[in-house]
Amino acid sequence: MKNIKSCLLQFVSMSLLSVLTLTGCGNNNKNQGVESLPASPPREKVTNVSLSTVVLKDLDETFTLPGTLEAWEDLTLSAEMAGTVHWIGPKEGDRVKKGEAILRIDPERLEAELARDQVEYELQKKRMERRRELAEEKLVSQQELEDVRQAFEQAKARLRISRVALDKSTLRSPIDGILDRLLVDRGEHVSEGKASAVVIQVNRLRVLVDVPERDIAGLSKGNKAKVFAAAIGGSSDPGISGEIIHLSYQADPATRTYLTRIAVDNRAESMRPGMIVQVVFKRRKLSKVIAVPLYSLVDRDGIKFVFVEKDGKAQQRLVRVGPIIGNMAVIENGITTGERLIVKGQQLVIDGGAVVEEGI
Image (cartoon, rainbow, N blue to C red; front, side, top):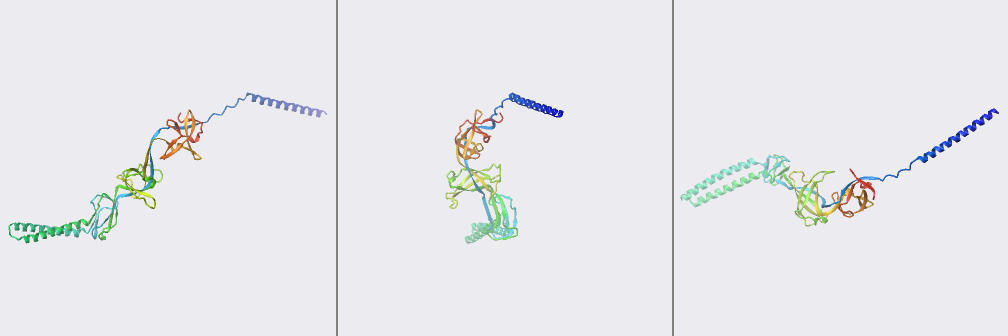
């Protein structure tokens, strides 16, 4: 019996202790709720941007077409007489001057014939002079004088023929250029008219361009153009200036394009015949237009707009885009001069959003 009472007392004590403990915890939570501060409102997002003031610009509207370079002169030289090639001077790739000898064909025989005819010419000349003196003294007849004169003229003609033949035995370059190819070898027997060497002029080149019908009307002889090597990937090629020297009047019936020739100064020899190049023509000059960098445009679902900054806020402006010239887009409507265009960070802002210029 005593044990049962003892157990009941322990149970009641533990129950009271639990109630007190729970009550204390409830009070603590209540006190904590009273003492906590209200949450702060979220801060407005500010986007860093780069700005550019809208101004009027003068731009050249251009178009670019592929072209092919060709040598200003590309000459295939032929042998003017038959014979054996005894001597070749310059090698392929060497520069040659106008009149410089490239090869000689059987010159020894022709030199001997020239020497023989030179002696005969001198002999007949002296005979004629002697007969003239005798004729003045009435010691020979006029017929004898005429016979000697004819012999002299014949000797003079044979000498001239020998000189021409010797000159033709030497193949010479008619221009300043480069010996691009030798088509014969030393010791080879060539016939008259056989192609023997190719000489090209490269300090001046021609560009051949097929211009479409829609662009030919804006071009004329004397117009300038810029020629660039057609490099793969990025290139810092400054290009070389050219001038239109010919525009065909009749279109190619297959392509409906007009052959255009452009002369370029290639004294630096930065380009070679046969290269594919890019030719930039000027279509028209645009004066005092608003043009913005292409990368400042935002295109969403085909709608183009830009953002301008005003009083620390971004304002969205729908724009009508005109011609694209290089990396600039002409804006026909939507923004005005003096406004501060967002050119960096525009993809991250929203209409009415807070912005700050980088570096401020």
